[in-house]
Length: 243
Image (tube, rainbow, N blue to C red):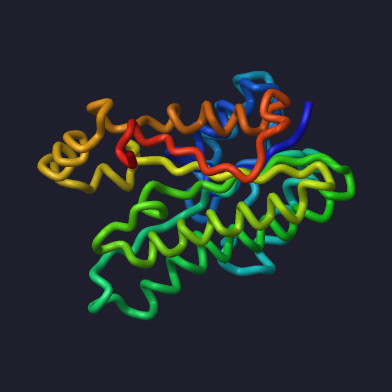
């Protein structure tokens, strides 16, 4: 049995990842910023799978808070084996009209926050010569998307971070991989109009939006012994959208 911290786990993909990891035999630390009720629901779902859960709160865009989240997870459950860098926000808009605040809000959480958490967890993992870090990138990080220069830059940055980390830490038994989801049915896509959703589905060979569980299964695999020789990869979960 091992311990995995999932950031942004109060809902959507993060919550599904926490449950899938519990089903895979892990105790799970549920990271969140503001949605305490959602985090509690995720922790309850983890416990229902027969594994320990801990709720850890903090805004990982702040380096000190990110370190505290990692420390609190280890204090509650034990040394981390896995880290799922899922926390993210969006502040969409065309580049020519995008404010500095909207740029930094996305970069600071999605990219810098992931760096802070990974840095905090890495020393212990390397010392123990075991660990799996999974970064949640996006198909947008691979393809770009009009109106999302901040989000695309952050998600592309996560890919570079992951590949560099895989090269730095591999000799110490720590693996790093990235997942690039396509359009997944979550709160972020619920705000889209039916017309836009139909357009997205029309460009997806599998003909549907993905589900959080579609992504969570791969996360659980990458944190398992079955993926022991996989590192430095970027795996799309996009229904073929990025082909």
